[in-house]
Amino acid sequence: MRRLSSLVAAALVVLGGGVVVGVAALPAHADTQICSQFGSTTIQSGKYVVMNNVWGDSTTQCINVTNTGFAITSAAHNLSGGAPGAYPAVYAGCHYANCSTGSGLPLQVSDSRFATIATSVSMSYPNNNSVYDASYDIWFDPTPRTDGQNTGAELMVWINHTGSVQPAGSKVGTASIAGANWDVWLGRSSWNIVSYVRQSTVSSINFNVASFYRDMVNRGYAQNSWYITSVQAGFEPWVNGTGLAVNNFSYSIGSSGGTSGPPASSSPTSGGTGGASCRVTYTKSEWQGGFTGNVTVANTGTSTINGWTLAFPFPGDQHITSAWNATVSQNGNSVSAANVGYNGTIAPGGNTSFGFQGTWTSNDSNPTAFRLNGTACSTG
Image (cartoon, rainbow, N blue to C red):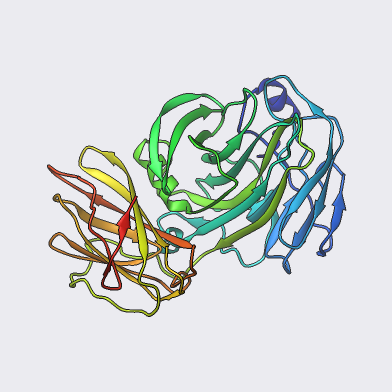
């Protein structure tokens, strides 16, 4: 969320998606109280910035910042429609020249490292009369700018909302991404506002940013020549908002982005140790001649999986052209995906996800036979 000039802001009315300003960060320490309109501070030695960001209302909002997130401790928003009152959030990257440390942003989407950008958030929702959405706000610009107004695209990922609030613009379709089904909305101002609204709400999520952005590109709403400038997670409150909290937030970027171009050929292999029980969920977003697939591997056993390779055959004529969060190879219709450095461990009850993009000609049926480290997995 960003703030426009007063003239433009007066003329612009959007729903979910909008405008904000950044200010210089306060000294970094946990349990900081912020009540100033655009106050902010850093956490985890500057790795993330937390901002109060009351950009759409004149009432006071206060947040309590911890070392892992923040909570709204008081808010008096009472808006009946239009834009939300604020976007309190934690973020990595740059927001109006207020940059976190070590994010690697801005980064051009065509850079292989973009495919490795992963993020997660865990949130708490109050049981009161608050009206809000809980969402990511991820910004893209045609230039590697660290300040000023974006003119490219705003990617919003809504994982919960209450009342009758809805994203900017109108619904333009649906998508299956990151193991879930989403309603896709498109709004326009001086940039595209593309919102993915989860059809079943959750309080936590982890995903690869590229999985949503590739869908935006395929729909013609974004370009691979643009730059990602920040990854933000927080809330847009219209009414109240007290009690909304980000409990934990993470952002990571790797040194390489999986495969590019035709994948190397190799046979499926098995390896790693621990954990014989697994469940695999496969979802895809498909268009004529192309698709993206998202694979979630869950450890349903009682021991930790330390290093994994997932093997499966495509039932159709699919061909993988790029991948993220895994090292993927294909030989004929046989696919092998191995963990990368940061996601090789899956605790009991835990899961990890990876994805890929590919082409197909006559058959894009979903794979159903998965083997993790040589052991068959259930699906669903």
